[in-house]
Length: 425
Image (tube, rainbow, N blue to C red; front, side, top):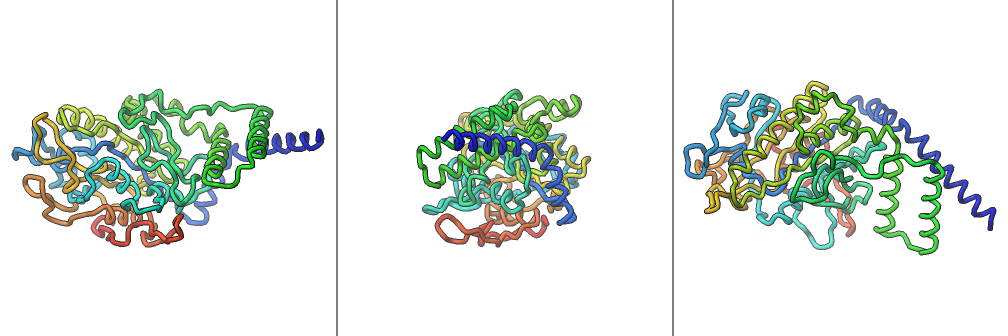
């Protein structure tokens, strides 16, 4: 019995030492191997998630001069004929790098359902556990890395699990888990990353092993999730992997350029993550649920968005990363063209706008058009399925590719009803 305990303890200690030694620099050769095989960098996606449903009529598709337009003015951008809000001047100067879809038309006006559809590309269907498209991207590229392949920064993800792909493709959350407020900059840290000694590590692994043996817990989604979480934690304990979350390694001037807001610093973290091969990063900017006091709040949020997003575009471009990184900037729906009695705008999925930039996307394009009052789509109506098909095509994935779901039914990456927007590709 003593010999058995000693063997187990020794094995666990060796495992801890092995993980520590193996992970010291494993992400570097892994990325080199990928580059050697594909002859190009694996593409990444950064989703800038405007949580709460942004008033895109006050961002990307203003109606100046109409009573629905509100007080904001349009400004010219670097692209002739493309005008956006006066509160997005830094983005206006980089309009040749991004394109706008002004004809998004969706059905869901409830926050929860709209988030789910926007994140998965599908409406809820019975027992099918649809993964977020971040999980799909991470699964398809499947780059071996000590850093999680899908990272969510700020707030709580709309789809928290990996769906039928498994917990290893669930988002790794950095920052506050609340959707009602964004984290402050001090929150943009990963808890419990301080290294422990091999002895401490082996003790913890031994305790976990013994608890599993005592409970005789069969393999299940719960145990799979625990195993996945343990494996990811062990890999992240590698100091070189953990350092990706340390923004103090960046020059003070660059950190200042992104802005001191949690969103701006989250955008900087996103750049650091894709630079090290992370497939999908979400950065949330919360607070867009503007049923009242819309214009003051949207002005403030626009300034935060403008600084962080414009610096991200510039930083990626200057580092040669923009051609391999797709940026998606959207919320779950738009806001009513009409202004309510509280100087606010309410939920409006019928006609709204969003932005795309980077990998696989032709910049400087405006897709679609809304009526003079913003209430109707006049040209090129675009659904979530179309957007998903475009995103997957943009990063070099076949939107028709199938994965087997948890109910034994094959599910395509994008809804088969979706049609890629060829003008953007």
